[in-house]
Length: 123
Image 1: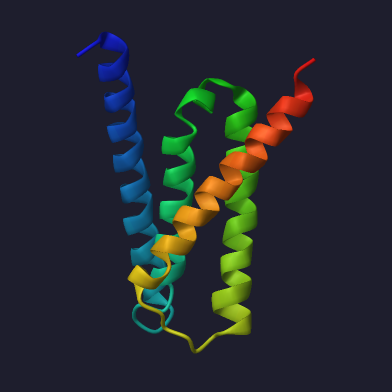
Image 2 (image 1 turned 60 degrees about the vertical axis):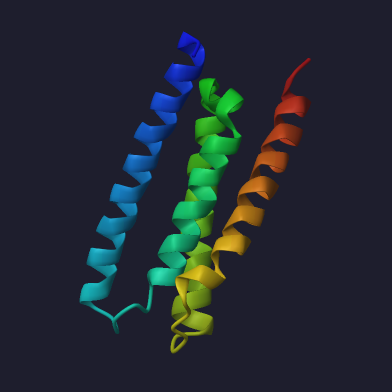
């Protein structure tokens, strides 16, 4: 296996563990003040969508614009999860497996948006 591939695999694993840790911390914090499992679907949706963006955007991770775009997307995504699960559907407790396909589609969509924005910025 080449060194570049080994480095990519290692960085993917590190990012995966970081995302998993953040998902678990969010689940612990959000389960304290609300009904059990109320926020689990939103947490999984967020984790899978942003981890997918990181994995599918492997080549773009070396640009600061990618990280800025990802941070903005994270803030907007968390706000939308709060609107959907906290305000519009406050009594909905949805299984986590239902949101994984949506998160996958969202990560591909976000990567396409980033690619279009990045093409506009290049001379």
